[in-house]
Length: 271
Ligand SMILES: NC(=O)c1ccc[n+]([C@@H]2O[C@H](COP(=O)([O-])OP(=O)(O)OC[C@H]3O[C@@H](n4cnc5c(N)ncnc54)[C@H](OP(=O)(O)O)[C@@H]3O)[C@@H](O)[C@H]2O)c1
Image 1 (spheres, protein in one colour):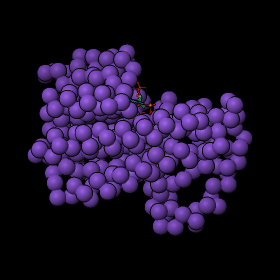
Image 2: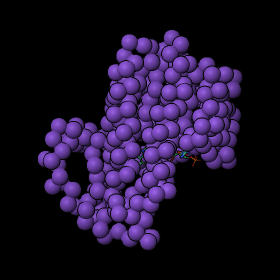
Image 3: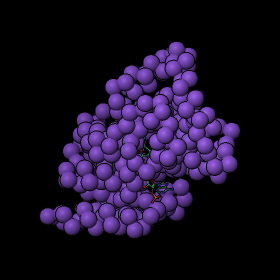
Image 4: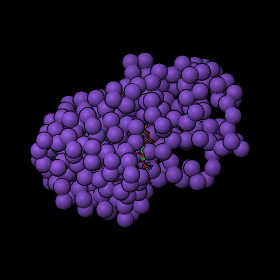
C-alpha cells in the first residue's frame, strides 16, 4: 500500500525506532495515530510532525499502555474513528542477562508487551481491518526471534512467538484483503539496548543499523506488502540456516557465552 493511502496505528511511537518510522511514513504522506505511555515525548512528536504538515492534521497521539485491556480498547476506538487500515505492532520491552537472573516481573512484562499485547490488539482491530479495501498488520520482530542468542533467552522467546503468530495469521487471512507482515531488524542504535547489551554487541562484533535505515525498510514493506523480511544479509542467512538445522550453529556461540559471563549485572538481574 502506498503510505498516502495508509491510516496507521503505530505502537511504541515515541521510541527510537517508532519515532523514525513515524517521521518516515509521515514524510511519505501517511496519517498516524501515535501510541505510547510517555505523554511528553509522544505529544512532542505529534506536534512536530503536524507543524510540518502543509495539509490537514494527520497525526494524533494516544497515551495508553498496550498491555491493559482499557488501553487497547481506547486504541481500537480511536482507530475506528480515524478509519485506520494499518497496524504496526512496534512497542516492546527488552530483557538481557543470564537466564538464572530473570525476575518474575520482567518475565511478565516481556510476555505481556511483546506477544500478548500485539496478539490482542490485532484481534481487536481485525473486525475493522477486514472491512477495508486494503489493510496491513506489520509486526516488528527481531533477528533474535529466529536465532537463539545466549543472554537473550526471554526476549528471543517473545519475538519467536511473534514470528510464528505472524506466520499463522498470514496463512489464516490469505483469502482476505488483510496482509500480515513480519519485519526482523538486527541490533538498532536506540536506548532499547542497555550498556550491558552495547558491551555485549561490541564484544561479539554484532552489526547494528540506525533507526532511520530500519524505518526505510518498514516503509518498503508497507509499499510492497512482502510477508517477511530480515535486516542484514548475514543475519538473514543465519536466521534461515538456523531454521533448517539449529545444531549446526551451536558452536558459533562460544564467544557470546564468554561475553555474557564477563558482564556485570546488578544482583544477577536482567537489564
Ligand atoms: N533496538 C534494537 O536493538 C532492536 C533490535 C531488533 C528489534 N527491535 C524491536 O524494535 C521495536 C522498537 O524498539 P526500539 O529500539 O525503538 O526501543 P525503544 O526506544 O525502547 O522503544 C520502545 C517503545 O515501546 C513503548 N512501550 C513499551 N511498553 C509499552 C506499553 N506497555 N504500552 C505502550 N507502549 C509501550 C515505549 O514507550 P513508553 O515507554 O513511553 O511507553 C517505547 O517508546 C521493538 O519491537 C524491539 O523489540 C529493537
